[in-house]
Image (cartoon, rainbow over all chains, first blue to last red; front, side, top):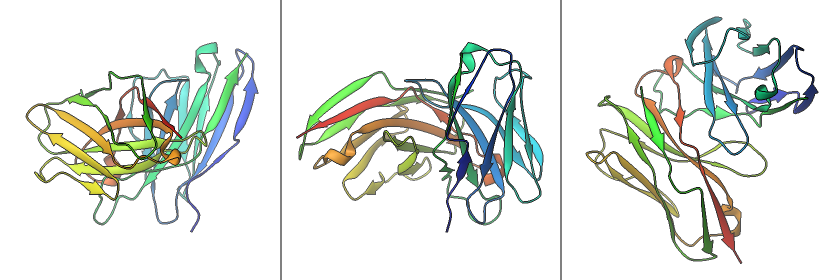
Length: 115
Length: 117
């Protein structure tokens, strides 16, 4: 049973560029959330996708956008990259039906460095 | 809005000893979950233990247990018989009770735990 998988694991971009990060949820999960974790800090909620729609959004600018596909996988896009966007981006999945225990399953993250 | 505070940035413990990590939170919700997550250098966030706010009994998972004080909004993690593999960053986190389609975690800043041989 594959867990949450993310790609790429590491990438380097320059200011002003655009980046796309990808996430495949755990088998049986239909909800995907994205978090940004700056170095030495706790993760911050970016947004959550369910039924291919953005359901909740944290305090992030419109430069951060996402998408969820019919197979429940998801993409996070960041436009006009800033140095401050350098962080570990974590994807987490959960299921919407049945008895939800509160547990989210996380991937290993994509480390983005903006130069 | 919910906030989670972890005021200790670092802690160190001798192998086989017991250590307690502190966490306080603030919320106006009555029904919620609290979690401790572990993040080793591999970066993957791993659930250590979960507490549902309506349950008065403190959660335990093998060597890990919590002291949940709802009125004081305090949620500490006790690790007994510390092992070298416990070395990691530990995050306290909050989630409003609801479905998986409406599940958002609010994390504290984390604490770096080092277990000394």
